[in-house]
Image (cartoon, rainbow, N blue to C red; front, side, top):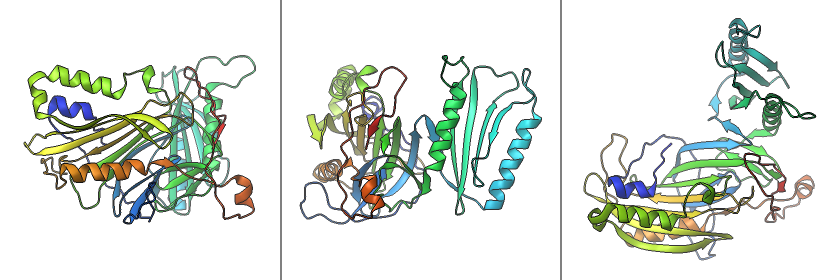
Amino acid sequence: MRRALSWLIFSIAVLVATPSAADSGDQRSELMNDRPAPSVSTFCVGRFLIDVPLGSKLSGADYKYDYLQIERPAPKSREAFQRELNQKEAALRARKHDQDPSILRVSRTPDAESRLFAFWEFERARGLIEIEGYRWIDGTQYFLKAQAGTSPPVEGTMSREELVLSKMEKALSNLRPRPDTEIPAEPGYCFEGGFIASPEWELEEAGVDIDIAGHPDAFVSVWFYPLHMSKHDRPLLERMGGVLQFLGRLATSVRVLRSGDRQVGPYRGQEHLATAPNSGGMRGHSFIWETEGEGTLDTPALKIELTTGHRDKSGNPQKTKLTDEQAVKLWDEVLNSFRVRPTASPEKLLHRDPAAGMPQPAKTPQSGAAHPAESAS
């Protein structure tokens, strides 16, 4: 997917985008400011929602849930699903490992429509074990993957391989199809074409690009990360100031429209709105908002961007149709719509109570590489 970083636009004077087409449905919603608003498309990303102009389409995405990489679902018949996994297992068993009978370490079938594999990638591999999980539901194959280390487990705990396999099996069992127009009422994690039901916030991250309807040169990016961003970078405005200093005279081609602190819902962050020429000499916009997060599972680092004037599918620079005022208005409407998805409690869902309240997750500290999933959504 596109990774359009705003500060790079200033250093290379190019707005770059590599589109990847994906269908996404439309849903009507009201913006957070409660003013009358036109119809919008609402996208569910992880446990968050964001509104964009009606007809906008998801064009690229990357999802990770509880250390598991979620691949894009693929249409497949049940017969093809079973046949291909049987062939994969046979091929893994047939490849010898220099210490094990084959590179296949584990093959599990939790139910008739699910399969898990753990295997060495190479005949002499030692350090990492590949873990794959598959599930078939109503003509669609879902595929998750991860890696596990081979260090000896601490006494009384399971190995990393078993830990990842258990995470994989749990995620597959809680997974269900989801049309992109559906906004689930139950707590859990949304990804393109699917949903993992879970009341607890796990180690979750995602990055999506959304092409803006009516503006082929414009897209919105939404990223969230489980770590506190200040652990590995400086705050947004410090980085932007450093880039402009580095550019010297070239910075005169950059016009800053707005820059400063900005709170979006409960999230305190910073925004930087600028316009600069692209490689074709036509102006585009690079708007970015970030919050560093608070180091908990339910308060991750967040980044939202609006980019205009990016290249078309043939790599040609495009001229944006948005004036500065229109771009800022669009930005404010999109950014203000970002929020945690409201959910009903499991008890209310069980009793089909139509009332759905906003979740209040507990603040669960994280440290190092361990991210326990103890906070509730």
